[in-house]
Length: 568
Ligand code: C2E
Ligand code: SIN
Ligand code: SIN
Ligand code: FE
Image (cartoon, rainbow, N blue to C red; front, side, top):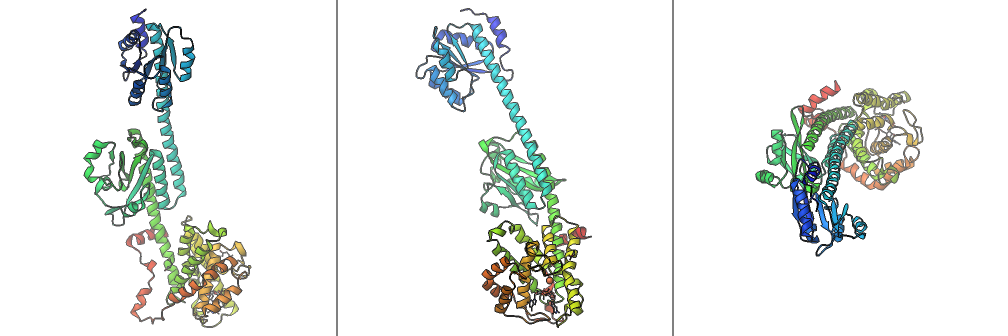
């Protein structure tokens, strides 16, 4: 056998990976060949392992992937070809380069080996140079593949993280409520990190406890019941300290065992990281149950902290915005309540009309025609907007509003301006916060609650579907209440009589679909009308008057401050 050490060395020295030693696994029945291969490889810095048979090769490879496998065509237990096929069929071993060594003169061996999945087929006798060259080209190919894969996966991660961030920031600009922002954050984080259990904890109003504000992969009972003292357990400490806790492995975990909250974290790795906005810790982001339990690496932690801090700023903005919106809404509702007090001692008219509206809308939802429009947001907006329908009555003089008799035509004309004035009042607030769905609906209702389905109502003479749905619903609720209760200008009709009047006006005054919904709820309306009947009127001297300060007037100090900002 011709053995030129220098040549072989010069070939292989350019082959061997610089960072880590390459490993080869051999299974040869010919001790001469084994010796040759081993000495070529070892002289050039390879680690060489040997297996006695094909089964042993497969077992070894599954445990510990070598950089190359050298197989004799003929092996005990499992032939070289069978071994090759088996290695190729498992995802763990399918990429290992395989060199098969055939018998002298075996011409069919080459095609059979290649078919089985071998990369190189050499026929005995082999020279050291020939062998070294083949090993070099194989391992070079493999290194290039590794590099490519590594490059691709880290580029992929960067591109993915970046596109998720862009997506998140674009989505944020369209979101106006905290829940939507939190849920988006959860889904983006889960996708970015491949974690199946993700939660955001925010402090409650006292600032003493953290609750789960949004999550994925967490059981509902856990979500609702976890209430973590600030400073307590992992998330509570992260919140106080403003620095993350990362447990990548069992050793890390053992150190934190006492403080680890198994309701939130029952798996490793886990990461609990603060969400900081301008020095404030706004909340905590918890991640665990990672796909394949992959540890978090530095690059990812970098993306995550970028992302959480961006998200924290968004949360803080949304919270301020939300508190401000709430204060603004409360003030508008309070104004409506005060306005109502001029011709309604008890203020219960608004409560009843609001409740009737919700009942009607919920019933209408069963009709496929309205199912998509009447969603949870619609109902929420309706509940808050309905009490504002008559806010324009603030501008109507007492002499008309409180007149115990029938109004003259000119008085009625003035009375009717309450729709337009109400809409204008709400629009003036809306101009400052154009994103309030509730105020938009309130404007529609105030403007159009006296429109008739046949177009003969006021102020615009809108017809049919041109009248906003919420206004069509409120029209019926408002009239049912006006009919069944006593007004300064009229006595109460019975429920029966009121139903008759409404039925008769189906298609003229009222939307027939709304009337149908009403008829299905008719007995419930009768019961509610009784339950929510006005209390006997109180004299102004009665100390019980205090109770008429509407709930919405009782603002918290923060709401009062914020409302001054938003309404001034
Ligand atoms: P409201 O008292 O809240 O009544 C709301 C709507 O209920 C009325 O809108 C009308 O469509 C219906 N409604 C009330 N009473 C009756 C009734 O006896 N029969 C029938 N079929 N429908 C009834 P409308 O007419 O546009 O009135 C708007 C508001 O103008 C009323 O609100 C009330 O504040 C005032 N108003 C209307 N008529 C008179 C009146 O004769 N005298 C006084 N003082 N105010 C009146
Ligand atoms: C609402 O919940 O806003 C309607 C009833 C009320 O204001 O009391
Ligand atoms: C308005 O009310 O703002 C416009 C005029 C009208 O149609 O009532
Ligand atoms: Fe009205």
